[in-house]
Each structure stands twice: as structure tokens, then as C-alpha cells.
Length: 88
Image (cartoon, rainbow, N blue to C red; front, side, top):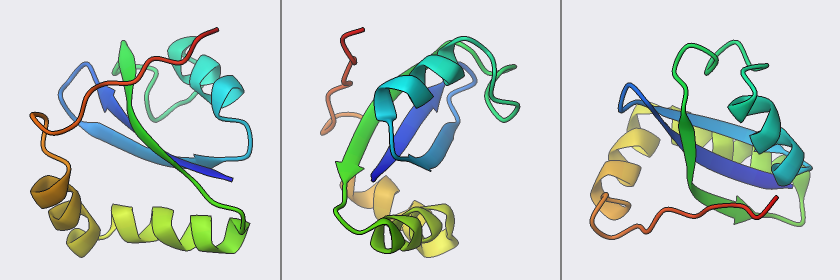
């Protein structure tokens, strides 16, 4: 299970969870996801892999919370994170 963070064209972020990161990224970049279709292009900023899907869902929920957003802002600054591109 994957938890991922996208950086959108509007400089906002999208946090999601999926069992197929490559396919989910394709659906985002193709404009099939309502939450990001008007915020294209998007880039994959970072991703995390979990063996347990419930832990992944809880981590996604945490990242979407106020304390999770603060954690990301503090620990995953633009300068410290290199963008990752998925090879298609």
C-alpha cells in the first residue's frame, strides 16, 4: 500500500493512498481525478510504502490533519525533498 504526496500546479498539495502507485499517478496526470484535474500538471513529490493497508490509511489520514500538515511543512521542505518521477 502506498501513501503519496503530489505537488499541484497551484502550489497546493494532494495526499492519497493506493495499492498501485504507477496507475494512480497516471489517473492523476490524465485528469481523471476530480480533486486534481483542475490543478494539472502534478508532480510526485514523495511516497511511502506500507505492508499493512490500515497503517497506510491511518498515515494518510494523519498527513491530511492539521498536525500532519505541520509535520510535513517542518520535515519535508522543498529544499530537502527532491522530486521523484515515476518511469512509465
